[in-house]
Length: 368
Image (cartoon, rainbow, N blue to C red; front, side):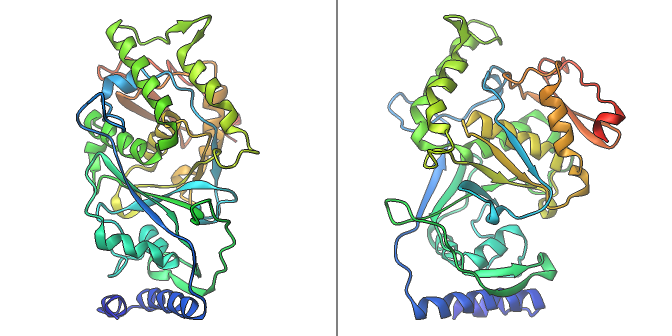
């Protein structure tokens, strides 16, 4: 009753349709009570470094500067929705620092809509406090109950949804959602190194896979060795970089037939829209974070955003360009330029010395 009352505090057609989603949920569970379980996990990057801790420490600029992780495959979807992703992935909730945001009030954008079509998410609003800069929340097992159309004021409930996703050995439906909160109304400060690091670490925290903890620790140790030796180049061991060894040791778990471990990231314009972030910067930040978290792919849904209309072509050229070293990630600063209306990015040090991409030249014919 409280949920319905809070949703109806101020009437609008989108609010009415949020109520219809909740009513659909209660009608369904009255006919057949769901079985299984849902798990909520607060993920953390520790601000202190203790040898006994079972989670990673918060990485700073030097860590990212010296990372040698290859960029993971990047798939661009100009249509479709994150929640309809074809196979299992960690689906990003463009969250408020208070989980659920305005789901029970007037909010009706990405996070609030997700909480309406998967109402079991609302339970987390009761016991999960606000997220700090070094925290994220992962939820596994929620069932979807509603179909919908539209967004914000055009949001409309359009009927029952029968969730056919299978369950894991804990009885959780194989729907994985990670809530990460971006900077709100960052304006020009979002381009400053301090805030680029904050956003990259926020995404990295959310994208971490605890089952790969031992591999993450090895990577952190490698970067520490590189820093101590004063080198930003990959350290070679038996003719190849240590990063390549970590990737190779994990390759078996990335085979498509082993779906339990082939879990990439399904995301989109995180921190943009109502939060006012730069979608081009957020695209690169999420790609770097997913790669550093050893995710096998990132699927990016542009939601038809005009700014990202040529994203697929630009990324393809960047990866194929001889000017790009794809096994080097360096994000002390991000230099953004545009060429024929499309994004070109290079990663540079704080003193503007380009150290990841020297220069990328794209012809108009390449971009179409």
